[in-house]
Amino acid sequence: MPVINRIADFHADLTAWRRDIHAHPETAFEEHRTAEFVAKRLAEFGIEVHRGLAGTGVVGTLKGAAAGNRAIALRADMDALHIHEKNGFDHASQHRGKMHACGHDGHTTMLLGAARYLAETRNFAGTVHFIFQPAEENEGGGRKMIEDGLFEQFPVESVFGMHNWPGLPVGQFAVRPGPMMACSDSFELIVTGKGAHAAMPHLGIDPIVIAAQIVTAFQTIVARNSHPLESAVVTVTQIHAGDAWNIIPQEVMMRGTTRAFKAEVQDLIESRMRSIAENICAAYGAKLNFRYIRRYPPTVNTPAETELAAEVLEEVVGPENVRRDLLPSMGAEDFAFLLQKKPGSYIWIGNGENREFLHHPNYDFNDEILPLGATYWARLVERVLAKPA
Ligand code: NI
Image (tube, rainbow, N blue to C red; front, side):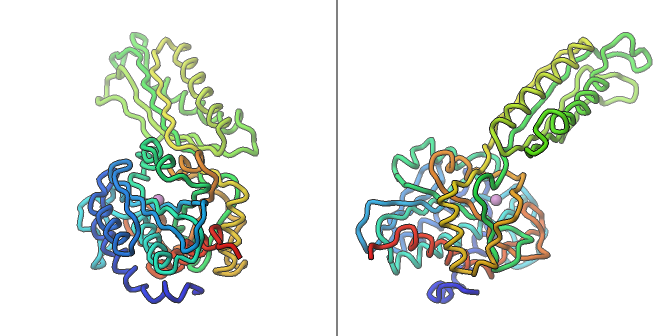
């Protein structure tokens, strides 16, 4: 692979670091050991270390050999998932029920690799901030870092992110302007009817029948309300009610998730869900309690920064290995919060074909790509913060 020679030289170190982090997964806002590991490496490279944003967040600041007022940020996530690892290799999770099943161990390591190389060479003008964030999964660690003053303390003109992508071959990247990942919202409905003897339904208000109609009617939001060319998902993932063969329960609780790429679509989904559920409940005399929780906004790449990232990637692996044609994912990503504040681009690096997908108990980050990811980061800094000729 066309990696920077100096980075290839310490591939074994990168692999050892990645496996160390993999063996000690830590979940949202508890990344104490990982943050310590990252801070220690950065300090060893001679990089200024700032800690404490969002609790376990770490930011490394490095100035180039040439003076300059410009600054950019590169971001990696550090958290693991609540999954019991099924891999049997030596560096498998030592923390029961927790696992790096999304490759954030690899993301952290690739950014450390770039930091080490850039600290040695400093072949750029201005400042690069290496952001290591907690709690990417569900808990919005990126948003918390912003609330804690990330971009006030570390002002930048743009910010870049990278995620590994199983199924995309090793040596390939994917990039696209506009939406890359979807927004992710959660909802909860409690339909309260009137419990009754199952043999005397006329004496009650059956919330199960009402809930069934709500679930069915929700299917019309994507099919009949949202524009056919816009993407959206409405999925009910939980229905809880009743505990007897012969009793109509008092209430039904339903939960689920919605996805879209645009705020207008997100608004439409929320308002249609509310209206459908309220009106079906009203028709049958049931009460509704509806909660709709905005979790992650869509991850939207800005065109200029995305073109820059794509050009750097084409220089590294050749245009034939930079996929610009992949569909965005309906998955979500809290890098979205950083992109709401700053222009930037979020790309995918191929983790290899025939590999388990993200969040699978047999998922494995591919150590082969560590120097390639680090090379992209390094070349991106040298390109965006190029020294004056
Ligand atoms: Ni992830």
